[in-house]
Amino acid sequence: MMPLLNEYAKQAEILPRMEAEVYQSIRDWVVAEIDDKLVGMGSLLIMWGDLAEIRSLVIDPAYQGYGIGRAIVAQLLDEARALDLPRVFALTRKPGFFLKTGFQMTRIEHLPRKVQKDCVFCPKFHSCDEVAVIMPLDEAAAVEHRPDLSRSNGTLKGQPVIPLISNQQG
Image (cartoon, rainbow, N blue to C red):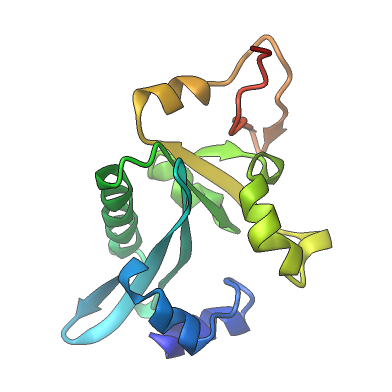
């Protein structure tokens, strides 16, 4: 696992992962193998009782375009559903991939647990080039994340920015 993770970290596509951290979270990982060769992986980190993150989704460049990433994401989403988690998000430089799998755009500001846990320690914290995407997994979360067209939520490359937490006063 480490050679593929390290290659993507060296290219600044993902945050570096220490080998000990990978071992400690080994149950969180889904890996794809073809002919006994590791060709892709990703992990699901439970952030809180209602939120999980897909992290370190990487596919060997020789195997990109064959649906391996989609299969890994589908398995991670199935696991989140089995755990009754209503929302899953990811930070990515390739939002198009996630949008094709049903994720919606959101804003990092709507993910305070992520910011407090990881982002403040990232060397790119003040110049982050990642985009936040989220997938509501149950109907209540889906209703909460539908864009309110009466407010200006902003756009990013033509996609609506969906708030993680409703802005309506209760």
